[in-house]
Length: 109
Image (tube, rainbow, N blue to C red; front, top):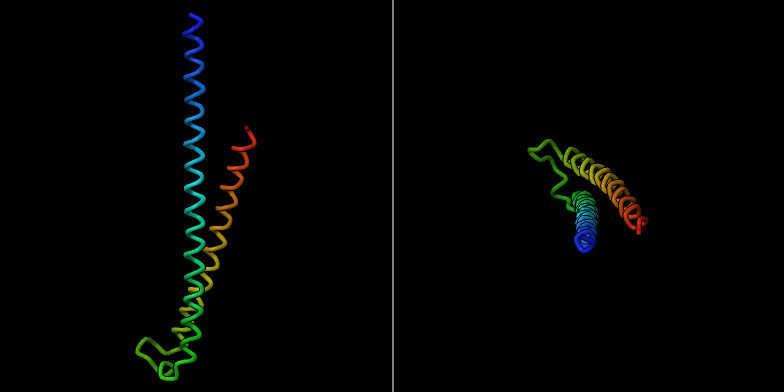
């Protein structure tokens, strides 16, 4: 009977450790996804800035286009840049929340 109780407690400890490892792995994957999102948003911002400046450098492109002119194209790039910064900020906030969950998880040890 004593062996059965010890065996049950070992099984419960093992199950608890498995759940903790699964939670850790889940948080780690979420954290890495947020880092990937931040890199993507930074690339979006940098490429939009590059194209925004490129429009001014190329003289032939600054003439009227069928899309409504070069000012409207510049406006689109400005909106993409602002949206990229907003998404980067949201991703940073989400990353901080995941870091707090990590902190709570490691505080229990």
